[in-house]
Image 1 (cartoon, one colour):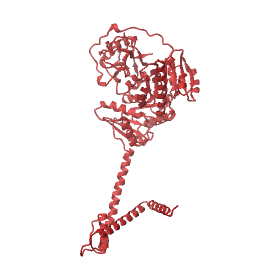
Image 2 (cartoon, one colour; image 1 turned 135 degrees about the vertical axis):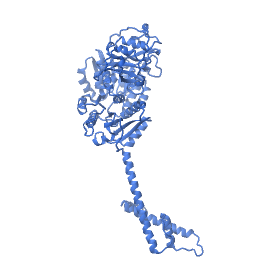
Image 3 (cartoon, helix red, strand yellow; image 1 turned 120 degrees about the horizontal axis):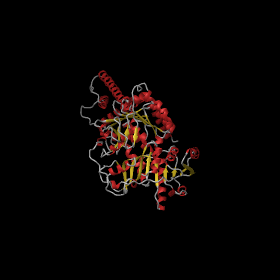
Image 4 (cartoon, helix red, strand yellow; image 1 turned 90 degrees about the vertical axis):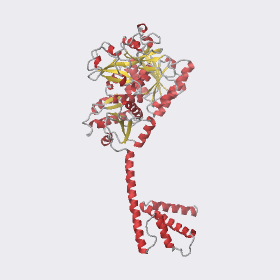
Length: 626
């Protein structure tokens, strides 16, 4: 190594060591820099300043003046050495006092800013919504709460407690949600499982509390997190004597019994079970996912529970024609239970509330005008027996087991389901599931659903329904990418054969829906998003728990998208009131329709004006019992 290079490294090493001594080293180098600055400038002044006759100054005097000017000290320029020394001590002491004061103020302000950045102060709000935990579901929940709060005159607030950086949470919410209008967002950093951290979001004064499981956690870990959060809210010393409206979702339905022990007043949703039902129902009824999306979000029509004393003692059939701009769909009884699509002759009890589908609670108004019914347009067609169905399931996840079980409930004997997946546990799962099926025959084939040769080996047009599942062992981006590749192959294969087929795909991220629509798949079920919408609906109105319990119960009323020819003749111009009456005569409640030519849209219309002429429609959306 060259001597010059070695000397440079030694000097750099010596400098680093001196700086590592902390304040002493910093002050030392600052003093050296100050001395060099004063000396160099003094020498330069002597060199460049003209010397006037009789004006020559002593170098020490010039050095003193340079020092005074450098530090901005208000001291005499001349005097005895003792006087100047005392002024120097005073000036130097003032520098250290002022520097210490500035340092203390700066460090205190930085500590306070750091505390604010961490989000550790207590939220002073009342009647606000608390969200515990952080996952991609939070964006859907917050967006829907913002939409629901638009009708509130006073500013509403949402407090989020999660074990993430406050600034990061605020930035991501600002990016994904955008404007929150009259809703304030308050983020706090802390663990929802810590009793002290929970107090920061004031759950005792909250209108509702929503518990979200961690992102990408296993079913066991996600449920454990939710159960601990429920236990902390209901049994914590600061919370146990208050009632809380808590909504949470579990992945494993077997844990719901434990959740009731942890919190007896919490509303706990079986997320995987509901997701499985939605996938099965949507696979069998095209565009049903659009209907559920409209019902569950706050941007379209949603369910309301309203008291109508003037309808007490009247049959439910009378309520069907008592509103022009909303659709009665059931009764919320005084004991808290709900009956959707009750018998037309059932009388409305004084303590019953009507479950009504409407755009807004302000639109729920009784009308005195009658709705003419076109008797000639009503038909009395009888649906024939349901033939066996053949379903192809591409992919596998933890919900696949329940999807097959639910499919077995709806289909007739002789139906089949073929499973194509490359996960090793599929064979064992199918072997355990087969003996439990009553109507379905199930077969399994190992293969990669993204492989064109694997898909070509299947007779795709022969299947009534095709279900493409998202792999829950992958991150949402990778899982949805696999689904998109499969959809592109399927649509290309069907197009080349000149046939169409019913395809429903399960997605993990709602942002991928726009890309998936380019594949022209019939329906998309974003399971986590729909569960988030359901949780938000119940958080805003606890009475809706029993409404959705009946809606997703196989023994209760369900939503069907049925051929319009089963209810009316194919003539445009009739009113929706005629469709409502045609459905009532079949013990069903009509809530919408699908147009025959949807164009670029989905063509689904819910809760239409009962007196407005209808376009040519090919499907009627009803609530009915299977």
